[in-house]
Length: 323
Image (cartoon, rainbow, N blue to C red; front, side, top):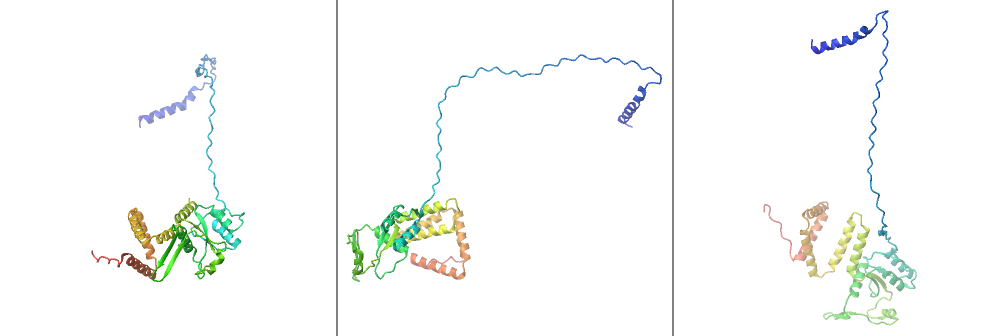
């Protein structure tokens, strides 16, 4: 048995039998109880009261100059008012029974002319609200049908921007001329005389509303599209519209400028970020592989014909296998 166990048993036995030892025998007098000794209470120390520092009196307040309140400029939301310019021009054509041809690039919002006294005043009120926009009365040949709006606008724009005061281009082999005279004064009954002219012209004019400068037209449509699409993801229709404008501008260039534009475009493509260039090539290849066999054949034939027209010969043959 360990000493710790033995010691525990001894302590347990002592604590168990000690009450028996303390019991008095029968008849034994009870000893008087001693009065309790009351110890004097020790004085409690006073609680620690933190001493507050004595600070000097604050200096007198000096009068402060009033601080001007700077008003933050409020961002006023400009709400685009007015009506669609194309709809306004259509309403004018219906009201005055006119044939109005509108520039396909013309976009914007204007206030309808409610106080116009005639068709000319109404068209003036509309075009004054748009920068670079004008209108002209156009008389076509008697046997000529009205061309498409894009074609007629391009003709009128080229004629208005022609700087020559007068010009006659003669074809000596066919005894034919093409004449142009600028700012010729006409009689008040000019329209009635058009039918008797040789060749004859239609007496009912076509009212053409257009951008006088093509660069203004492209800038206006680009800015408007940017404002409409701000904060939204680009769509395939946006890219298609830009490609149509690029194609129109490309067709207006002379042959030398077309070749120069193609070279610049190829150089820009080669200078593009390699990852973006590879992504464009992959998208083009994926689109090509999704075409039907007939569409692929037509596209390849058109590409061959275009290359022959531009370079004067067929494209080089692919390298032999293994080279």
